[in-house]
Image (tube, rainbow, N blue to C red; front, side):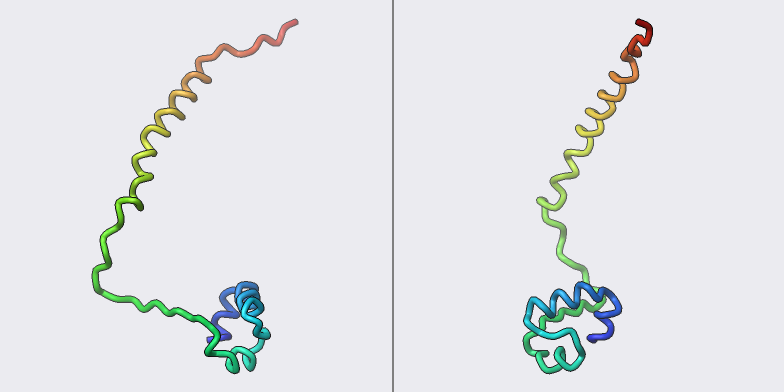
Length: 86
């Protein structure tokens, strides 16, 4: 497991071990295995819970934001160019 995590992101693993006061070696990790928190997610065919409404609330902001951007772009596009003659 140590080599897998080390190969994935060595800096993250080193930082995590240092934050727990554990040296960055296999021996140190094995000796302090009880202090390490490793979570493994397994694939499943079961349906997960439905998304929370709060997770989808930001989607309502997209149409007004696009309308404002379009309006701003249209105004800039129709604005006369600044005169370059003195």
